[in-house]
Length: 297
Image 1 (tube, one colour):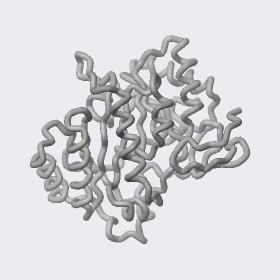
Image 2: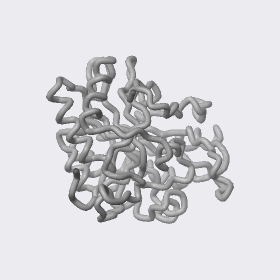
Image 3: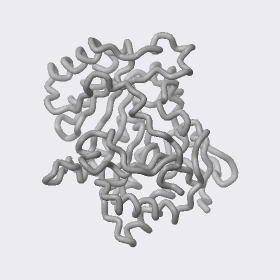
């Protein structure tokens, strides 16, 4: 039992999660919706074998456009013990995964650290990917030193009004900047193996919202000015309208080819030379896996 009050993320719920659920909609018991090889991450993460991806239930954001809403809102998820989670990590290694990829893991940080320790004692020596929304506390990132080898983090917004409206999180820009700074300092630079698979480092994802090119330009400008080639940037076009966007008609559409190409051209114009970009047609449901408890039973 985790008998300390939960302040693991910037929400700082300050509650005992064995008694009640946090803003993340989760108790202290780990819940997972899928654990399987995944081919839809950046090439240096998925490689040829796939990334050993574990999708956790719950989330500390409330993004109105969330593609993984079935698990982020807590509707889907199977309870697993810390011991079982360690077994899952080892199983993914046996399937020749390039890494163990924790998706939306923040609210289960303490449990995951214990599971990694257990798995390592059983021979699990793969790099660990911390696949996060970017809404992390600096203290939690520090706690992951020696556990998270790669941070695959979002940087969603620069404007507090935008982050409040679409993710119920006005302090997102401040928290994301501070967390990213710690991630970069902690990893000390990007390192890839001879096959181009990342062993350690930071990849920052930015998803272009329809009609928000100027905000995206601000994000890319900040990332490049602050970090240059100390991070890899992934410029994403896969925004997929969901059923719950009726009250947000301004973003209830896909990103146009023109909008995305304009942002990519902007990135080139400010000196970003080595970014991941997506081909046309990326906004497909194929990016959203089936949360059917694959790999858990």
